[in-house]
Length: 340
Image (cartoon, rainbow, N blue to C red; front, side):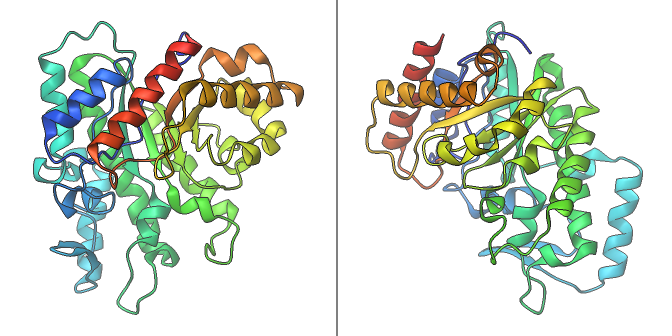
């Protein structure tokens, strides 16, 4: 993992309905770590829950969203685990009608020179965010159901592995981000989950991805207990909202020391998304420099901080308009040019 300093990537969602327009933005502004775009404005199936819902037990995609159907639960779980045990990743594929950005991404790669690409970025919705978004028949989030929480963790792991298989023909290194916005509320009364469950679950998920020689990352766009992520030995990248929560992350400098010592890196979500008001690249670059200086003063090594410093928007852009999305990525690219 050398030479990634200042490279740019995206979180996942873009506001486009036209696949080629979305891919044009990705390859223009993230040429070295391109990502496949999630396009939720095309259809609800391409939202962050619907997109990963296929062939999960007792989960159904309806016209207005994903719902839980407990009918014949035991049989559905039995069939599900037969595919898990046999490591049938193809059973967990994401079909084209659920991810046109992913299939367009592969087609674009087939017709493009690949020499400048360092990594191909994939992503899944994290198990805690996924389970917190679906209620059981009593109106209670499946996050609290140990059986289905474990099933979702297994299934999302398989969907990550399927993506690696889907794109392996290009012979590029790959990275999988686990998107966990729900954990931005960790520690509050509204997120009644314990630390051990989060660490154990994400460790299991990242271990399966690491076994395929891919890098693993976690994206959390809120404030959280960042030491949860530094504790996970199989996690390579922490992607955080550096515009909104840099002052909170630096409080975890001691935890970050061990993370960097084993080769971890930060992906700075430096360009705000919903709050973007045309902030200048100079201003945002200065914010990164100040953040690095604070961490160095707290005992982190300057060279380690800078060696693989990645850049992204603070969060996904799926709810914005296309003009604003392009302005955000243009700003990100200009920051990158100042770092390199």
